[in-house]
Structure formats: C-alpha cells, structure tokens
Amino acid sequence: MIRLPEISKGETVHILGIESSCDETAAAVVEDGRRICSNVISSQVKLHAAYGGVVPEIASRRHLEQINLIIEQALDEAGLNLRALSAVAVSSGPGLVGALLVGVSTAKALAYAARLPLIAVNHVEAHLYANFLTGAGIRYPLVALIASGGHTSLLLMPEPDEIVSLGQTRDDAAGEVFDKVARAMGLGYPGGPLIDRLAAQGNPAAIDFPRAYLDDMEGRFDFSFSGLKSAVISHLHHMRQKDETPDPADLAASFQEAVVGVLVDKTVAAAREHGAACVLLAGGVAANSRLRSLMREELLHALPGVPLYFPPPGLCTDNAAMIAAVADHHYRRGIFAPLNLNASAGLPPGS
Amino acid sequence: MALLDGEALLAEFTLNIRKTHSERLMPLIDALLKESAIEREQLQAVAVAAGPGSFTGIRIGVSTARALAQGLDIPAVGVSTLQALAEAVPSPGALICPLLDARRNEVYSALYRREAHPPRGLEMLIPPAAVELGPFAERLKTYGEPIVFTGEGLNSYASYLSEALGGLAVLPEAPQRACRAAWVALCGRRLLEQGHPASFHELLPQYLRRPEAERRLKERKRGAK
Ligand SMILES: [Zn+2]
Image (tube, each protein chain N blue to C red):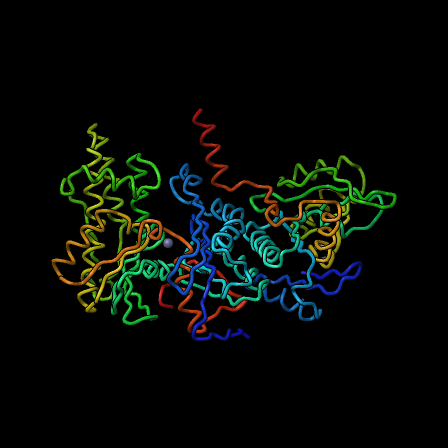
C-alpha cells in the first residue's frame, strides 16, 4: 500500500519536517539530511508563562493557528514549492497527544495533497540527530543524553541508523524539575535559563540535596527527579517557616548540581560500559552551561579522548530541522508511514 | 465525509464508531475519492465541520482541511456543526434546535427558524453557545411552538426534553440525528458563493468554549482582586 519512491544514487533529497509535540510550532526544509535550507520556529513560551508550564489545550489551539503559516514560511525560505520536495516528515511522538495530532493531521493531508511520501519520526531520536546537522565528526558506537522539559533519555547508537534506549526518566523530566523549582522559588518561566544564570553566582555545595541513582541493574540508566524536586520545595518551606530567607543563588546552584551530577554520572557510566567513541548531548537542557562543563570535565577524566558534541542553542530546543534530518535516514531506507498514522504520547525511542 | 458535484451528491461516508478520527480520516478521504473516480487534484474546495464538538476531534478535521487546501491550492471553509445539523430539516416555518453534548452538564446548541417562504433559508434566533440544558429548555418553552430537535445530544437528552417540553418537542430517531458531511459540503459551498473568506489561513475551529486552564486563571485573578 505504501508507495516506495525510486531513489537514484545522485538524487538531492529535500525533506519538509513538521514539529508540534509540545510548545513550539516548527517547520524546516533540510537537504540530504545535513544542510538546513530553512528552519522556522514559532515559540509559545510567552503564552504558557502565566501558567508556569505548558497547558496542553492552549498549546494545541496555538499549533493549529500557526502551523500552515510556518510551513509556508519554511518552503518560501528554502525557495521550494511542495511538489519539489522528496517527502513530508512529522514527529508523531512522544509528546502531548493533542499537540502532536495537529502536526500529524497536517502532515498527512499535506503529503496526500502533494502526492509525497509521509515519514513518521520519533521526537526524542530526532533530538539526537540535531547533532548531525552541525557537521560534527560523529563516530560509533555513541551514547547520547537527550534532556528537555518533556523527556530525559539515555540512548545508544551502536552503528548508524540503530538506536537502543538505555534509560528514561521514571517521573519528571529534567527540564520539568527546573521549571517546577524555578516556580517554587518565584523566579518565573521557563526555569532552565533562569536557574542556570542564578546558579553561576552560587555555591553548588551549599545544600546537600538527594540524588537518585536507582542502583538496580535494570534501572541503572533510568532517572528520577521527583524526590529532588520535593526536597527543594520542602527546604524552601522549612526556611520560610523559620523566617529565614534562603540564598537564591546557593539554592539554585545546589539544586542544579544535583540534577546535572546525576545526568553526567549516568552518561559517563553508559559511555564507558558501551565503549562509546563519542558522546552527544541534545534537548533543551543541553543548553545548560553547567551540564556542558561538568560533562566535558568528567569525560576528560574518565574517558580521555572521547569527544563531546552538542548542537547550537537553536537546535537544542524543539525544532523541525532535526525532524527532517532524521527523516532523511528513513527516506533512504524506504521507511514510510501509512495514512492511518496516529500520534502517540509515549512512543519510546528505538521502537 | 462527502463529495458534492454541482447539485449531485457523488458519495458520502458516515462512520459513527468510537475509533480515533486521526486514524480514520485520511484513509476514508482517499477511499471516497477512489470510489468516486475523482483525482485529488480535481477537488475545487474543501469544507469542514469546524465545531462545536470535541476539541481534539474538531482540530483533526480542521488541520486536515487546512492542509488539504494548502497542498492542493484550493479554497477551504469552516461550517458550524450546529448549522449543518439544522440545514437537514426542511420543514417551512419550523423552529429547529440542534443539540450536541458538551459535557460538564452543558450542551452546545442554537435555535434556528426555517423561513416559511422561498428560498426558505435559516434564520438564527439564538446563536451557538455552550449552555446548561435546564434553563435553555425553559427558554425554548417560551416560544410556545413545536421545536424540531436534531443532533447527537439527543442520544442522552431526548427523554429529558420530552419531559421538559411535553408535546412541543419533536424528537427524530437516530438516523436523522447525525451531522452528515453532505450538509457540511453544501453549507461550505454556499458560504464560498457568498464571498466568505476562502483561504485556509482564516479557517479556524469554532470551539465556543475557552480552555479550562484559561477559565480558571481568569477566576483566580478575579478572586485576587
Ligand atoms: Zn523535545
């Protein structure tokens, strides 16, 4: 039923990527999986700031209002019309199901109308592929940490096009705890950059917050941040009861160190165990300066010579260039999605 | 979904099974066109029931319509689900009340009158809104005339209405309650003929209700004052 396009050896592949899994509506055109022809993002951050987090219904409504316009801009900037494309790709999960459905419905109808093949992309895997857009010297096997407001995943790529999930968060995503702690501290939203900036002036050893390592063999690469979140909130509460004001910089630094410490330790342990030739960071939390510096330090110490790559800030957060980049691999292997494609809130990477 | 060619209804599918629209919609559109031997490039406009209804359901329909229009470079128009329901009732002079379940003890409804004389268009007496059925039924009663109800809200509220309105409530059976795509197509064509905006950019859902979180935030702000 799925039509396989003829791919000739020298064909230039242009894929339109569509992304709507959380609070960014995005479309991009990528050539041959590497060159970004256009990358348009409409962020809803301001829309959700009043709520201290993403409100799914509000996000879905906004996606619908924006998505066709964003697609039009992405095509215009790439100087291509729909019919000149090789395929339409969309992130079909994981994410907020109502938000994903806007992208999926749009991509299906657009691909159908323009008689283009449709490609379904795993959003978390796509984050990993953002690193392929920067021309970094990627070698295999590689270990990747994908951390954002929606997901925290440790992935292994033993070879090109093969992704194995090593671990996931069991509760809150890393970026989500940043948001919730920032909210409890009255800092604002989104919490990641605010805490990062504040923490730079604080003492990371001021307060000893708990770190969940989940030491059972099965879950040793899983994450859990809800205990840490509760500890920070109850610390704030106790201080207020005693009429003491916590030093916000020390609190931010100590909290951040606890999150980043676990992320780094597990990533380095996974890289060692799997003999990684390089380590990748991606997702919004990959923009955290302490995560980058500590990861580099610990890698240098534990696995000297193993390089660390992370995308520029614009490609860390949700974008559609990464969707089109990963779709290029699907395209070349002839993996296409049927018209009954659905969105999936909990699509695990590597599935 | 339905395919309208001039005055003729070429094909229509109605599926009322609780399977996700997301999986069904595009394959059905494809099947409808194939069965009708129409190429997608031959479509001249697309109309969609833009609400009210389930937020997610509306969005799947509207997203699909917008992207089809964008991809095929044709006009697209949104039709009120309530009006499409009322259009199906031809009786001259009749009061027509479409009813959809809006949950949280409310219904989406409106009141129309079918004009007694040609061209026998629909006059809107009460605009579409999410309302509590009890007070709304009281309001309908004041018209003192028979009211033809329609819409799938009747699946839950038919007996309530016959009790509240007595003999004034005209309650059709299941086959006449569903919102049929042929009426959506027809209403859409009329809107386009009347010069309604035809660009998919202007095609937006008719939710009739704010997101729950927005409502609560407003209440909190009001409470804080
Ligand atoms: Zn993401």
